[in-house]
Image (cartoon, rainbow, N blue to C red; front, side, top):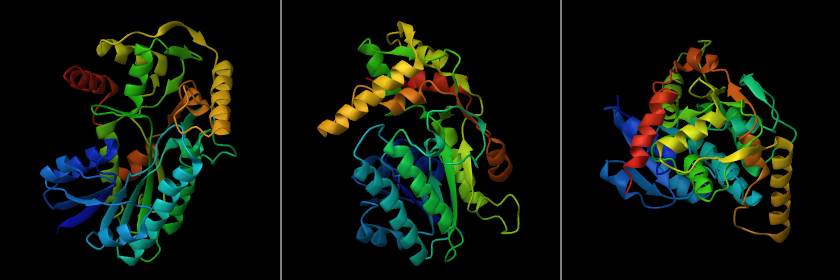
Amino acid sequence: MSQRILVTGGGGFLGGYIVRALLEREDTVVGSMTRSAQPELEALGVQTHKGDISNRDDVQRVLKDYDAIIHTAAMVNPWGDKDAFYRANVTGTEILLEEAKKAGITRFVFTSSPSVVFDGTPLVNAMPDTPYPDRFPSPYGETKALSEKLVKEAHDADGLRTVSLRPQLMWGPGDPHLLPLIIKRARAGKLRQIGDAKTLIDATFVSNAAQAHLDALDALDKKPDDPTNPGGKIYFISNDEPVHIWDFIPQMLAMANEPALKSGSIPKPVAALIGRAFDTLWSMLGLASEPPVSEFVVLKMCTDQWYSMEPAKRDLGYTPAVSIKDGQKLWADWYNSQP
């Protein structure tokens, strides 16, 4: 039986990988809702819809044609206006959930983030029930946490089954966020190790994260009394092989023939203080541009963050197919082939 699946943010990094993975399923009709036209997706046979998820009229117009949603669209910047984050991440998710119920949609997979439980202190083999922090170092984490709560509360309402995934530090061919930022700072001679060289951080090759979303979508069809049914639950997603981040970054730079790190390191407390000062200054001046460094980015790059994959393996059948080593080669081959 054919299924019709809408991917919000299908023109984005993760969304694009999810769309392509879904297209490989012969029984699946794939649609994408994005803010801008997506000729590349249209050429692949994707039903594209131009719209804003925080606009109820746009959402109502699109959802009538689908029976499942994979919601990846979000504002993911490390810095920005809190109201803009709230509108994109919270209001948009709330409208999607409300209209999904009205449209009779039965499955809803939400892309959350480990940032919803991150306050700058270590997360070691963390489980999905890790509590939300009292303080968030960025509006991104705070608004994604609010969105995640909405998704959890919406489970089992009007026939809608929901699940949330928290992919950690996604990267791979086409990455527009993490690796380009690192390379930009390396080229400017401004990239230096922050904190301990032994900092362990989970990372996720993007196709593994995409597969986890398909696994979660399928797992929502398990019988309600199955203890591994993921409905209403939350899962961390990673490659399940934490890396020493200050080994990983130099490896990637070398494979891309880009400048190396500057020598020496900056202690975590000093770097965090500098980041917080820039955050405060930019807020006081009302600047829309991104500061040279933010507290959130500093803390993410020098704090242990790795998570248990056992719940995702058990309930979703998730297995990361691409290792860190193989992913590095795939990314480097792609990067070095760019004009």
